[in-house]
Amino acid sequence: MFIFKKVQRKRNTFVFWILSKINIKLFVTVICFIFLGNSIYGNFDSLSNQTINSEEILWLLWGVLFTSLSIIINAYAWKLLINNIGCSINNLNIVKLFLATNIYKYLPGGIWHFVSRYNALRLELSNEKSIESILLEPILMLVSGFIFIPFRGFNISMYILCWSSTLVFLPVFRKFLIKELKVMKSKVFTNNNIIRDRELEQNSQNISIRMFYPYKPLFVEIIFLLFRFLGFLCCINAFSIGSLISKGILISSFSLAWVIGLIVPAAPGGLGVFESVILFNLGSYLPEAPLLASLLCYRLVSTISDVFAALIYPVKKLFKV
Image (spheres, rainbow, N blue to C red):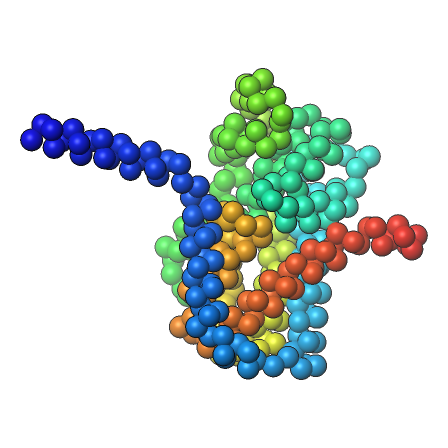
């Protein structure tokens, strides 16, 4: 009996060791890719029969327009957020920095847009403020996403649960959140991990709590998500399935998928994760083949929009506009 317990203990230790070595984000992303690939394979014939004529192309172009505008709105929300944490930058165009670096999220690792922004910001701000402004931006995006998740139906507990996420920007919660995120993410922004990690942990005590609640950045971020959703809705309408489902369920599922895609993915832009969550949520409401076609087109629309947004300032400079 003693030997059995000893063997069992060693086996459990080995299992926990294996689990600790697994990259959870990569694991979930791979599972989602398998799920998505299986759905595409099972509907391949129906997908190949989907046609795109001039009307569908027009809807997709509207999708590119709304999604491109959403990126610009997101950049403006970040600018307001930087002002909200007590920083004023005159020598740096924040919107231009955001748009130029947003495309870097497609590089392996998915962190290079953050690193590039940090390298630019630290020339104007302290290291602490630079990192704080970068770490708060995804939180702002997540909170705006939670706002729309309860729209599926009238569930008071769901509204309270999701809308209470706005409390993270209250000074006491924000101070704790930023302190923990700085320690967790410091290696992303620093080369000398041993020295800089210790400095960041000590300087986390210097986070200002005399900031106003970021009403304006949050409001603009909500508008960003609405425009993002309109781009998705255009792709849904391109395949004539938008009228088959209520807009409340649609925006709720979109927001949930977008939030999970922002938190979980190992692939850039929530690739695979976003599509899988949408399929899982809406598969019982909409025909699967047109829904898959809409998701594939939306991924293309999102990528094109990122490229367009990154080219805005270079094109303006080229034509001296």
